[in-house]
Length: 337
Ligand code: 1CP
Image (cartoon, rainbow, N blue to C red; front, side):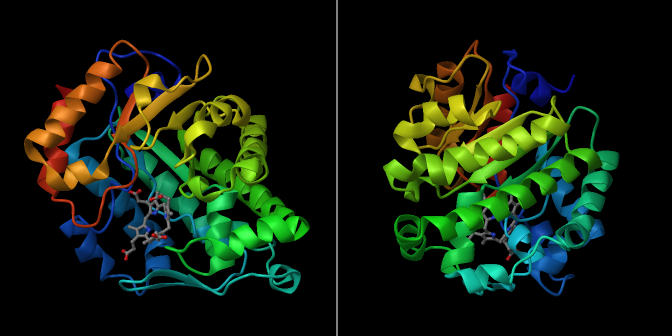
């Protein structure tokens, strides 16, 4: 069995498998060169030939144990009919949904067709990957995707989302229902196309008010995990409840995920996960910018603190845009020993 899949099944390996969140993308010169071939970011993500190539770029260069499908969490709102654009330097822009009339414009009727190219990418990557490398499919968690749908952009204080959570729970629940169903279908389609593990990114879980963490994060994630496991009982699922702090153990126990990505604000060795749930993490992505002795010392500290336990080496969040690729090469060397 592939090393990353062994670790996801709870096996402690002589050295942990390694892959990095956002390991494909703008910090790589070969990505920037390929990016100019597509009209827009959405066109790139929905072009199987180019998306296969982008997925493979970091594997070829660095030899990670996992390849993450090249796509984006915002393809789901795009497939539901919400207008989406990526503006250079500004990130995603969507036509915000703030009321029932806005939500009524969305529909999952065409979602599978619009997302079909992603399944071609999954098949293409599986056919091209070295035999020991695991293909990870992914989607955004409903809360994190909803923050973009409701605010209309990233990098916000989530004011419209939090207002809706408290003041219009029924409208919020309808958005969650649509996202739970469409995300579960999207992940099931990826598993059918050949994804060997799945990840659910709740990057902005830390913005949820504590009393609503169940409603916004745990319950919708648990529903997706259940719907995926009903069709694909053996596919491992990794959850990233980024910034969830004191909720991490309950997230691990109640969502049904097989592994939990731990952010770099958390002391990974002291997080208590239920038996069988595997931790993944948690180097500060800034250390990949810094490189050298501070990066190596921290990577070695993490390795030592997790020694003998099932564990997957990763960052606490995604690779930063201006990361020097040679620092990643060195990190992979240090972890592989
Ligand atoms: O200009 C460009 O070329 C676009 C940059 C880019 C890339 C390379 C975006 C726009 N998305 C991606 C790919 C991507 N996004 C991947 C596959 C590549 C890989 O991981 O190696 C994945 C898994 C994602 C997931 C994603 N998109 C997340 C969750 C992970 C995380 O980093 O927290 C989130 C929050 C997004 C939204 C998004 N898409 C793109 C940007 C710039 C953003 C973030 C905007 C913000 O800061 O709010």
